[in-house]
Image (cartoon, rainbow, N blue to C red; front, side, top):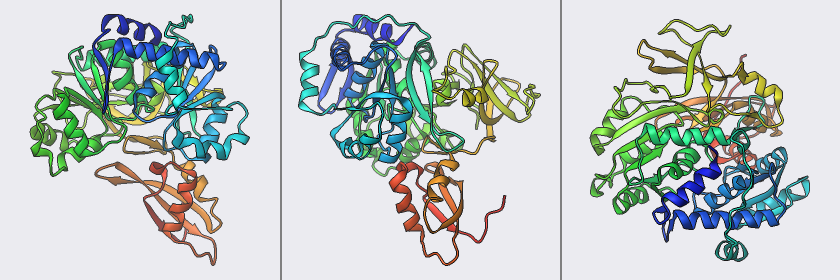
Length: 481
């Protein structure tokens, strides 16, 4: 199976059923396929061919889905970028990915103009909110591009922070993502009668598989929100009779503490899925009691497309567990030498299966460091009990997960150390109820330097996406280690 067949079968099998629902649009599966084909022809005329890279930098709007699937229908690779990326980050991502085209909005034009002269390949800026692009969607042509695609062909590239401080492009194949679509529909028993609410950015691996690719398999409808507010979420659940939600823990905690929650009817909800970072175990039963709906917790990472383990419908839930290995994937807990540890003992979680990425783009050394004999070394520490349930216990690698986004301390440290008043720095995780963890910076100032936390944060905002910027800064005399 490849993603193109998934789209085409959905257009045939669920033609007039609503696929996407936004504030002022209801788009059927047949209309969705027509729009995807129109964008594919537009890109083909712009010179995009099989194997090319096309960057997609958009919020959760229908145009994201048009562009994403249009790119893969041409056999090209969709490079999905965080909409919060600064011009500094965007320059690296576009150059490293070899993207020929940037599909985005007019709001990004200023950032692009600041860097375009530094770019080797990406000379084509396309604003999907422009009149000319909208005309493309309405005028067509609407025929299928009919490009031959193999399941092992690369489909998508998603950047994840690297240990050296530079993001790495994880290349996911058509097989990787198609298998995840099948998996998600099976695990949460999704059917064409369901209606989901898209509450994770589609440029995120979890958001793309759960709220975009999997809908093609099941024929269900997805309500799209490009801006998330708690009032808007509750209103959408009541108005559209939402049956399932996939979101990060921060959102579920926000729902629990939202003062206006009781005035909304959320009885249509059947299941809620959480991932991206651990959900505090004590809040899962509290949420289920408050809203009368089960929370299923999963675990994954971008390099695994992303789901590795899951708590299934009807399965006994063990507090603190991320469930058991997904079907068609193997999970082992190993020691430093790669030997499996006894049940109950802590080791590194490694995974093997159709979900494991092809590799990191243009970085064989980084790929070899995480994929060994077909096994993906996750860098996460865990233990497995006698019933195959997995419990995360920590991280082998230095990484912070804040609101479902990964932050590697080295990347933030590199930026902080560029400030003229900074001698050295260390970035660490600090526990936070709502976000799971927040970024904290410990800084040693140069002798006689005058700088405060606000200046450091301001400096970081120039170069880093908001979720990477330290929320706390502590000035210290020295940094040990």
